[in-house]
Image (cartoon, rainbow, N blue to C red):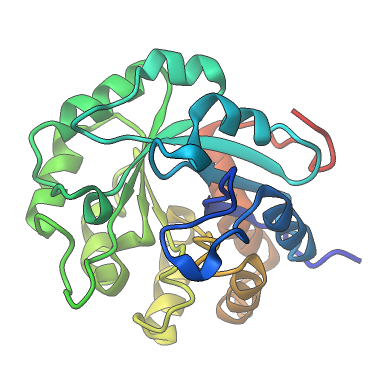
Length: 265
């Protein structure tokens, strides 16, 4: 019997060449390995996110790799505010969204280019994924929480997924985002790293379960680690609520089809 409920993993990063930003995964961060890990954890769907324009992340080849049989991978394209991709072309290739990463991209959430980029992406049907994890040795995302709130205000009506939900600033990010229907809070990495207490995580999941989705941040965290933590932290919730957090909220927010996980395309 499969482990229930199935999980829609909001954040994975398989690469064509198997590499990753940290060398300890060199050659091992492949589509094949990810699909095996997702299947073992009963995660039939995942967002697969490119991380730049290097050989492992070429947009056309990447989207083709996402269509192979196995757990369904929905592609998301890296967006550098200095040289953004052609959003209409990206959408036509089959991408579902764009990802902006202040910490690795060297910009702040206060960057004046971001509202226009998010609005332009929204105009062609792309969801904006924004990393909100603080830099190493810091407790604040680049640009600060007030700038994040201004960005949410300036892009009202545009669908945004706040990756990691602020990490150690979870409470503040939840407070500013929980009433915004155009924002979904993702708990990838945050759920598994110990930077946020289990009590705090259990509280927000019980109080506003409709505002969250979950992810692994593979290869940083494996789908099996995500499954273990998800099962632990949602054990006291009813079956419907657990399934909504695991996959239902993400499908409802994105409007993506709930594919047969064993079908290609």
